[in-house]
Length: 598
Image (cartoon, rainbow, N blue to C red; front, side, top):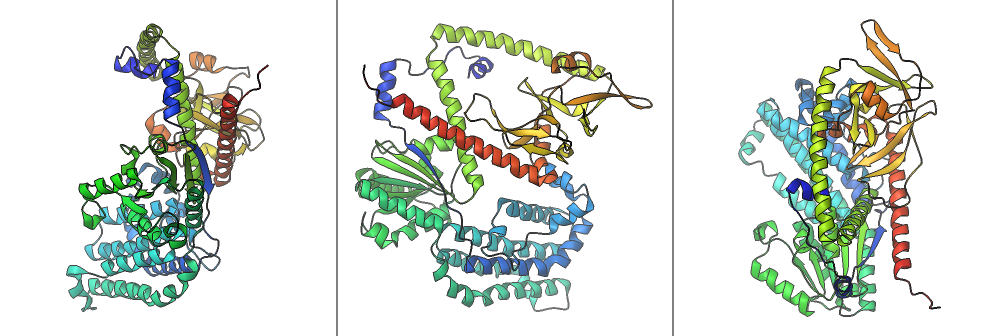
């Protein structure tokens, strides 16, 4: 914050400083308790399995056309930075167009619901749409991708709500997809190329519709979802605790918001007999038309007044309710597999103002849980920052800001000097393991993060390495989190693995490698001696601050080069956050616990 003020040329920060005022604020605005509840999809789901098999069939039917199209796209890798690495070898290239299959061993369609599947399909669709292909083939492939998208989002909806709503979504989208528009006339002429493509497309759509009868038969058995059951349990328990409760349920999309409200209104046992038949409403943006699941401002005002006065107890909402909704009686926030940034986390939690309120995340995947733990950690860092600011006098704060201004000026000057030094240094060094001699990277692939951590920015450096378990048990004031020790294949420690933003980065310990200097005849090893990063930077090679491009190049590097190590890093990160949250809650209890007087 001091650095931010210095860069903005601000002299002070306004905040509540008086201890009595702070206590009064905490008394009137209670902080809700955080809960994270894992709700994994059912391992066996006949409806989802059948949708996934339909998707498999479509993928197999278009594989010949897709493969020929991709062969003709020579620089397929331009779409985004990480695809460049994917396409560096031929096997990986073909893996890019091979979407995951449900197969006979799949049971619940989960292979088709991941963000990875969605991203892979999106890359294919983008390239086919933007590249120089003949119009007929492009149109056919894009319509087929639309069918795969329909299956993907049907499965996603099925994970969150009763299968009947996912089935309705499938039927609505297929009705739109079978309208060929100007291409309908070509379907009747199979002698032309576009006519053949349209007949193939019609065959795929008819194949989907032929499965409606089977899907309709398995819908009842697939209606109850673990996450939906958990939602109803929380609503029922909240009613037992407080019959006048106000509950906000956050969901991701406007359409999902409308459907969830519709779904809950039909729950007589859990809601109708407790809160009442008219207890549920939804609120979405007023900037969209009714056709796109928007609301009028009058309708939104009516619902908000009803929620505030108690005629409405359960409000299903999108992110539109994160700001400006102030209901003192609100005592339960449920995030229905919906997380955002730390800003959204704080704002959503802040809607629960009543005493003993709770904020609950119902999460389908571990990645959703992980995002919430990251948000909890970032909020903790913000609170430390605010506490430090509140403990300073205005004069002290102003002095610190002025000192920071001078530091920033000196830092910029030093960076310019280092860049000039980097340009003037022609020597290149190879960094290799001190035990087995495996090449790690070159000196021009090392970057500095936060002036204290030195990162290897070569994606392939992850290959043939391991990540040893190590994590921090408390939240610290760093913007990075420790995710393990980076080990060479020979067992020597190279450094640590840290998480910075969305990227796992390998850091280098100064004693974890040796140097070889590049000469005209090859690389020459340097005399073995103990080096520090200060000596390395002053005497051997310049290390600049890590760039945005370098961070981007490393975002997917661990997963693409070493899937096993990626899993270990994720596990370490999750364990660290779980332990830190546990210790944070313990500290809170200790702080507020009643102590026996002497």
